[in-house]
Image (spheres, rainbow, N blue to C red):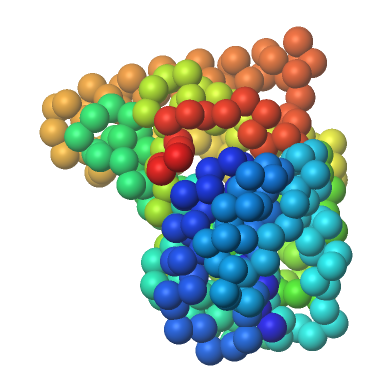
Length: 303
């Protein structure tokens, strides 16, 4: 059985598109799509749009954070069958037509526990924030591919990943699920692989306020890992690791305009890192699981 979980937050039209992107695929096994959202009006909309399709279900999110609702669903759909697969994605993204098939093919190796998909920016590269989104996502995908090929540990993207059922029923919610779940699987000696052919198309922030909010939330989630795990896994998402990976920009940029944007990104990232550390260690504003506690309006693709 394949369970496809789509977590959303008051974006009914985008979520409808996310559901349709899965229904249009040729999925070789029985599957069910579970849409989780805390808004009753989204429940009404989704139930109405897919009222004749028994493969789509709605789960009313209690509104306590993405990790909370995922744990609730994981417990309900838990199976001892290691061939059962869970696919997790968000309502504000949509996947390519081969996404499920690619993820399922990756699980043919019984030692594989997790499959990371590839986020792709839908923003135009012809403006600063669009260029930033392409550069950062492409660099991260490049890094994941390298680590996957070396059979080393790496973290997932919450935009799209697959996991083998029967391994965990829940996970700690003090950090983001795409940071925590890989550590649980790695501790159980499961491999994590990257499949660049399973793709999720993502609209990224389009002004600095939303961009900073999203990036600081990610950094705070990584800082929180230190309180949850003492697993000796070297975190690669640090200010120093990012500085080394940032050298990728010199083979990525195409023109003088992108060079200027790259320099601006360097200073923006430094600001975000120091700001996040200041808020965590001095203002005691730690990562919170309420994943849309503050909404990033410019990342809403349709609603």
